Length: 287
Ligand SMILES: *[C@@H]1O[C@H](CO)[C@@H](O)[C@H](O)[C@H]1NC(C)=O
Ligand SMILES: *[C@@H]1O[C@H](CO)[C@@H](O)[C@H](O)[C@H]1NC(C)=O
Ligand SMILES: *[C@@H]1O[C@H](CO)[C@@H](O)[C@H](O)[C@H]1NC(C)=O
Image 1 (tube, rainbow, N blue to C red):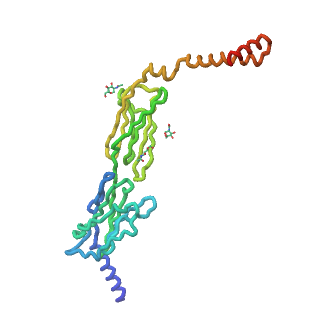
Image 2 (image 1 turned 90 degrees about the horizontal axis):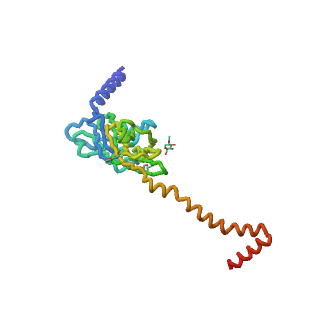
Image 3 (image 1 turned 90 degrees about the vertical axis):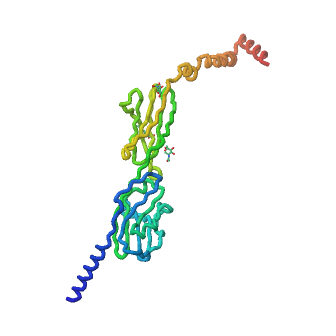
């Protein structure tokens, strides 16, 4: 009976201890731009002087696909321990040491990329243990659009390409008809940083002169990036000489060839006397 009471008391004591130690987020959600730095933080109770030797911190990121987590940064009893740090965070994740004295565990992540986005877990052990979740979202502006024009006979193929995050919607229109989007073929691939590399192809069949624009709409940022090109009609004189060469250029060599080959052919086939003479004469003349 006494033993039972002691267990219950210990249990209560344990609950009181863990309840006293609570980790709080500084901010539940962070937004960062591709290539920038971000500082995400948690708060934990520290009375008077921090005793580093009793402090352990773990930052990791959940992976929705595998239900596992990637280790981002670890402090073990006051000592940095990067032996199990995920390769993807090597050299990019640090803990701000000066913040620890004030009871803050602040993760400093540099050169942020879309593959860093997700849910982070901030675990702190300092007498008691607790953890909290923090969400990181990453955006990348479609800054620069590469526009390319390729002429194909009477047609013109316009290509717009750009990289950003998240996936943008691409719209093409002609200045003459700014309210009507033109049908284009838009595809994308992912870069190793997780950016969408979008290529959109507009075929002008046939090419019609005008000013054409392609617009990348990043819904998340509510931001438009566009570029324009002027398409000119093909010069009719230039096309007629380049694409339809004068018939004389074909006929003349054929006539010359025929005038030489025909008598030879006849000489071989018909060996009548009069033709023979002609052939001998020709042969002499050629010598
Ligand atoms: C769109 O472009 C892709 C890649 O260039 C091609 O494989 C696909 O067949 C095209 N689709 C249409 C409808 O033209
Ligand atoms: C994006 O795609 C285009 C065309 O497929 C390619 O030429 C370019 O190198 C790609 N850019 C990146 C950063 O992957
Ligand atoms: C394209 O735009 C320019 C000015 O931006 C204008 O001078 C030109 O006439 C336009 N071309 C056509 C075919 O509309």
